[in-house]
Amino acid sequence: MPSAVASLRVRYAETDQMGVVYYAHYFVWFEVARAEVLRALGGTYRAMEDAGVFLPVIEAECHYRRPARYDDEVEVRATGRLVSPVRVEFQYEVFVKGESEPRASGRTVHAATDRAGRPCRLPDRVREAFA
View 1 (tube, one colour):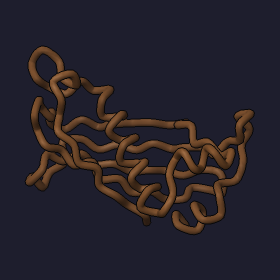
View 2: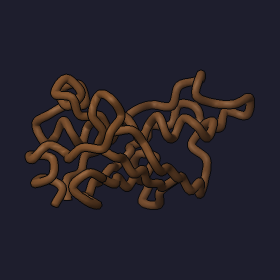
View 3: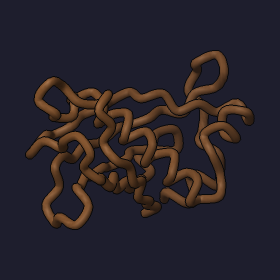
View 4: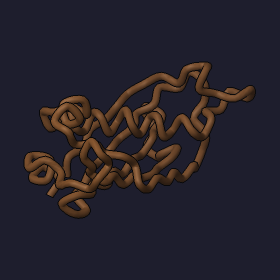
């Protein structure tokens, strides 16, 4: 299964008053890692969208185990798999660098659509890479 790791440092703007990462930012980090998976396959979201295929999120979940905090270095590990010719799923784990237990984990499911929002097949190279 295709995978990639995105590394980042928690910014102050991503935290609440206690220095804990606000829950919604994990989904932004998932997107960063997801884009890295596509990049590792030799493509980009932009190229896919330029070709007329979009990947809206149709399911999303995140399980928070322990908080990440301001200035932590985090790694977001993403793995993708083909669900059907028109759907792909990504699994994520968020680690503070150097730790073996994830701070959070989650998943997103995406349906391939055309410019009008109608379902369409994923590009051949994406289907082949995720199969």
